[in-house]
Image (tube, rainbow, N blue to C red):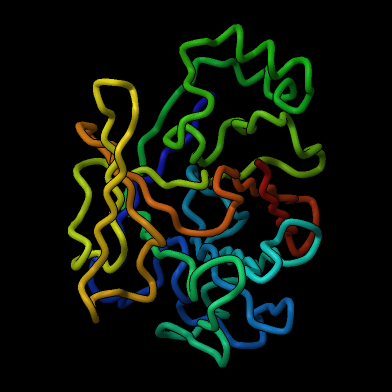
Length: 279
């Protein structure tokens, strides 16, 4: 099955946003306040603002824009605290939107969800035939697929962030029965970026380096930004395994090892979006 792997750019390293883009976290572009959902007595945090960009993300019509929100007071674990708002670009204004209480620091996280921009895509084919898609939603069948396709790294943060194709479930197995919904995309608890980690003062958050010692133990070094260099929309943390060719960022509360899944029903008008996260 073909799917798409997004390229992320940390917003605090990218400059000022001057137009509508597809992104994770931060604050929304042009969103009227009436569409901003609340939970636990406060505005929810923007989890994603994503443009219709087929074939990577097909939201049903040109100009469609998907907004995901998460409450970081309750975490969006149960039926509340996780909303989806599907609009058209014509419904949006211009400029970044901030409303009263948007950045109140919650019980389960930071004042904003860490902001990353999507600035490209890789097309990937995992070799699993499209005809076997339904097996991903059956408990026994999905584990057989794991055995049949051992070359797939089913649990890495790189492979568990993907748009299209089939879901990569956590170790707890299938968590959603699709019809009439279809799988849109998923985000891992940690988002993967190529290259060495940025400087803490430049990125605006802590940078954590893990170093594996000869005795098998691991050392962890945490370097924080200097006073006044922290940025509100920065990732919650940047992490790096010493000697690797990539780093990864923590951006929201998905239980430290969770995965977020998004599903879409084209049969309803307006189209319905549901999302959930599971460990």
